[in-house]
Image 1 (cartoon, rainbow, N blue to C red):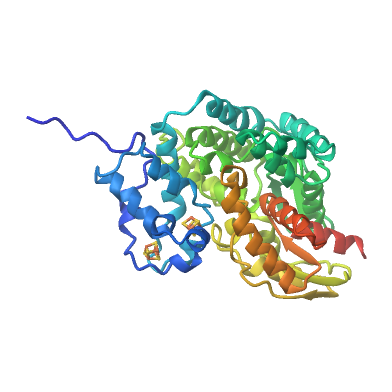
Image 2 (tube, protein in one colour; image 1 turned 60 degrees about the vertical axis):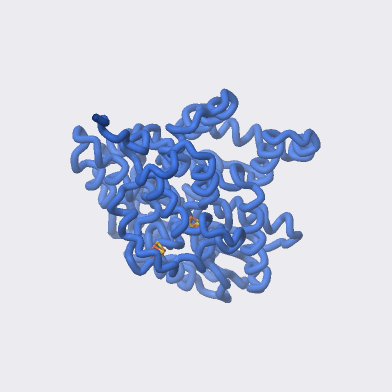
Length: 429
Ligand code: SF4
Ligand code: SF4
């Protein structure tokens, strides 16, 4: 007598078999996959990774196999393959499910466990600590700490140097964003302040609130909110992501608004999927999906609502780069382009492969620095070729990654968040 066959994956977040079965192996996604383009390896393509996930279900590969971890962790989770897929394969859900299995199944070194606890428990959910860390890191970068760290030739030190490289020249924090509507009120919203947005790009949060207010939208402060958990979910830390999601849902429910506005594409994509994240939690029932239906990217909300006040004139040649989690994760393409076109005086030029990842992808530029660099170089070359003097985007990871790539290439092209540019245009009045 044999007993029941053991479950091949160690926890309930396993990549769902019905989602895997939706893949018909057509390969239409392959030309859109940045890691397949760089490595040319089938197992580093969406189709190959889905095949690996199925192989574990078939008991032909362990969830703790180093090969599985290698190919899954090289995925950017950019979801370009979802946009390309004619069969509607929900690849983002699959890869995040696979990562959570690897995190559970593979033993971690004490150092790696400490780094995970430090990043996911101590820093990201605590904005004041993250803000202080950002200020300290920016000061260290200015003092040349990156060069010193690189000179040690130690793996961890070099990764810290890569992290310093990404930081902007200064951080701004802006607690509890709020602004009264100007003129006739057209909406009442709350804003996700975000971990990185709130502690490094606080000025962009304030600019977003000002632009919304100018267009008749009241922004109310929402105490009790926290990091959205996107970075946790991307890194396979789904239980930690769920804790943060529950705190955010409870906080925003209390604010009783028409919409929850997010100006970081990665955070918005994650929050729109809170229903999926909490699907197995009976105590929360429909609350996550009801909440998720209110989440709007700032460009999506304002683009759909339409600007009532004409922005002032700005001069320059600009181009738009789609954040992956805006275009592929949230399927938002037209609204940011329309908002950019609403600013008079700009010469808007096309960007080749605007829908291609920049290599930021959450913590990817730290966990996969060489691949991230190759992917970034392709993006930088396209930006330089476009002839633009300003590249506009809408996600903190993309802002930092592209800025760092341009700086390293010796280019002085400016990188700016679309809401900052709109705010600048209004101030130009
Ligand atoms: S998410 Fe991006 S990197 Fe990952 S398989 Fe899909 S296209 Fe490739
Ligand atoms: S395009 Fe979709 S169905 Fe075709 S191989 Fe890629 S994931 Fe599978």
